[in-house]
Image (cartoon, rainbow, N blue to C red; front, side):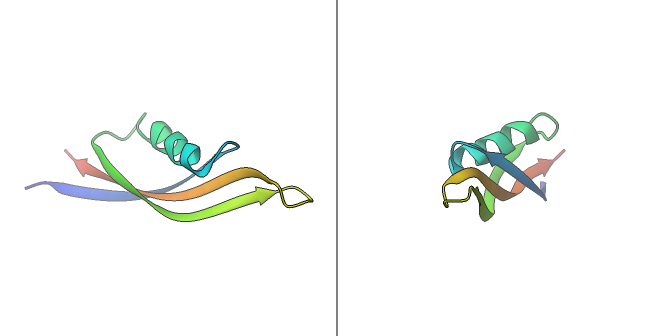
Length: 67
């Protein structure tokens, strides 16, 4: 029997929402092993004065198997 754990993290990218997810998972994988998946829990954007998106932010729930 295996046990899974879920952690929550935030990540950002100036490129896209998809890149923010990739950045978050890549950074998480430096210390967390056996990552099995993630949910995008929330999406936020930072805009400049005219409404142009300058940064994408995501809140992720990452699932991994505990050894």
